[in-house]
Image 1: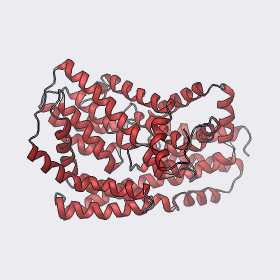
Image 2 (image 1 turned 180 degrees about the horizontal axis):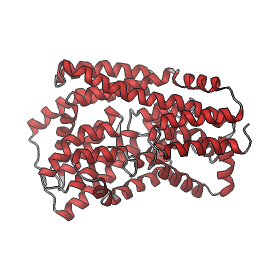
Image 3 (image 1 turned 90 degrees about the vertical axis):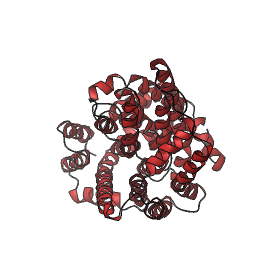
Image 4 (image 1 turned 120 degrees about the vertical axis):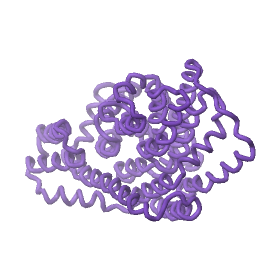
Length: 435
């Protein structure tokens, strides 16, 4: 349908609209409508698909995840996680950098958002690191790159989006479990890099936390961290669906924030809820218009054509994976993660399955790949937030970002070519998974 010009019009109009600065959600919708008009498809069919795109029970998990993360972020959880991380790694050379990375690993298990992590942990750690003599750009780079752990460490709302984009063929629970080891690998690689840089620049050491204080800090943080256990444990254990676990986590986070920690005032709740609604609305608008766009792609058999094209370029699995990784890395520097997952998954997933890759493996690989784009100019959302908090020009931060990119790329290559790193843990819980 649409002949040879239809796919060109669909993709070309999308790229032109993005280049003109049209928000990605509206660019997806307009491109779908233009193409539908060209091929003679009733526009009502596109709008029905947009409506169907957000009419999905699984997607209810996203607003609940965002709300639970916001409650814990606004309710003083960031400070408690920083103190907890300081107990474990604060005493080594470059201790504050290590604390930053480990706190992001903890916080990522609550928020599932790189931007939320940078905003919460970064507002504490970047000024603290600068006061202790760390270079401005180093403090920002440690913060923004370590925040990407939250994208793959469960619970991640991007995993929910990927499962939705895959047409329900991928288990959210399996994606959650599969993200544990890759997420920890990001943190470990950044810790090694931060230690090397800190030793070369002679950044300060911290002090050991006395045992009594350490026990108190752990006790204060454990109530908030139990949110992760509710979500992940409930889903993996089959107690809750992802949506149900997210709803229970919201109730738990609300009780802990308002009645145990009591750092969030009742008068602050409307502002926090307003921010949550804005975030969720943006995500759902993207999902809806992406559904209409995907409908046009399916009508014109774009996924099948892309599969044939990529497999015709080479029969070497390693080379095809290199091509796909490079393509995603480039796209990730220009577009946000959620729309890219929604657009690229229907196109690339058939290629991956044709190569014999597990959809779970591909999901983690894609999220890890696109997370690098969040800290890469020109459209690195997390990079912009980190620079704003650190009050450092983006150009200056970007010049010193390359060692962190290399560390993240090494992890990406390991995850891509060593499937066991992603699939070993899920295979223990779900014996049907092969790797």
